[in-house]
Image (cartoon, rainbow, N blue to C red; front, side, top):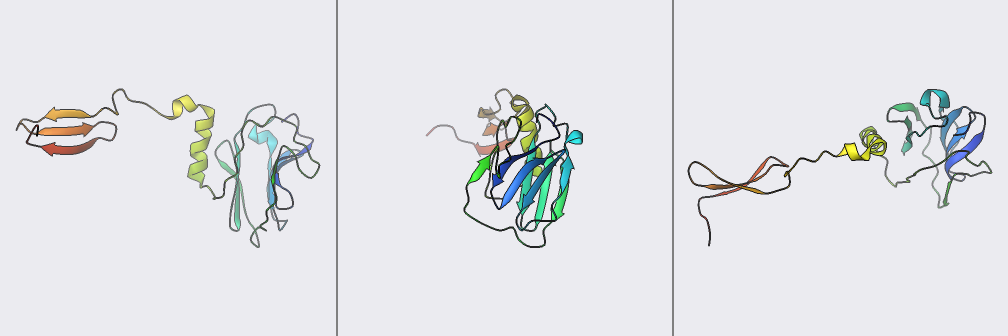
Length: 168
């Protein structure tokens, strides 16, 4: 974001849903209008820096997340209106967003707080998100003291099979 004085739509389904900058706050609204919450931009640290912003609408409940934690939650008095309008990215209702959008997602299912919490570190440092263990996906054959063979898969710490016979 360039500053804290503008109004700019980040993502919109015009007439149905808006995720936008309203001056010095983030705001997510769904029709029917009213009862939505704002979250100040300064505590989010969004001015001239990358942030992870997520909004979830699940029935009457709506939530706003900034860099993982939920920062706002509200209940609607009636279900959001549905429609077939296209999504607008970086503007809507003649309110252009003044900043850079790196990536956005629109999904047909509501995501949980745990899902949002997982997505944030994955965006922050994808190389650190998955830890690989040397030879973890290699299948190991081990002969036990009794002479039986065991198949082990260290990545899952599974004992896959055990047999006392080798060969056909």
